[in-house]
Image (tube, rainbow, N blue to C red):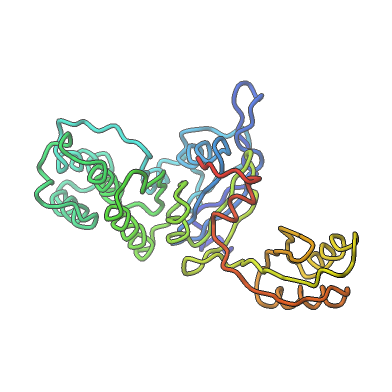
Length: 318
């Protein structure tokens, strides 16, 4: 990826706790393009929260580098251009929504002369009802507080946004609003990194997603139009062939076609393939080795399938 097109670059990042006895991040490397929505998923304790802390320069890694917008993550200029929406926020419930944003407008160092306009634009962008702008936060629902949190992020005019569980606990209407806000952020050139266990929303929103497991990146997947670019291929073959050697032959065909054998049974198998060319190559390799293929059917691959495979079948996410 060209340096001018890169918003975030992480190289061999390592972070330990308890005097080095617990490794939270173990040599993580990845890059995020400007304007990209990049997802982080993985099981509990995988290291996602630690990674977010390092990106925000709240945690100091043991080794490795992080560059954000071409500069080290702990530069003051980088912090000014980075916005953050935590999973849970502590609000001063005596404040009104407008007062909360006035406070953050000042923290962001924005021009006080444009404060009123900036705040109202942000509130309109997150579709918070005007009747709520001057109400105490103690009267806000969970969804209203999350919209206010997003307005707080927008107030700072960030170039990079880090969002931790942005749709957690929201009703379907609230989820749709947050989804549109994040898409609008991308359209305006803001890069976003989302840590979430809401796999359906990650599929809808993200351009790519990283699977983190035991402090390492297990894989990075590309998503287009809500679909994983990889897909599953179900292949059925005749049962009266190849006795005990079937497994080895099918595995060899998968390796040669750059496919991944995920299941192999006496009468059928399932493979993960990158594209149509790889799928065609897989069938050719199977037939060339004497496997009588009777049916080959592509299946759309869901993020949940990938997650379960990468996490060894664990269904719980952080």
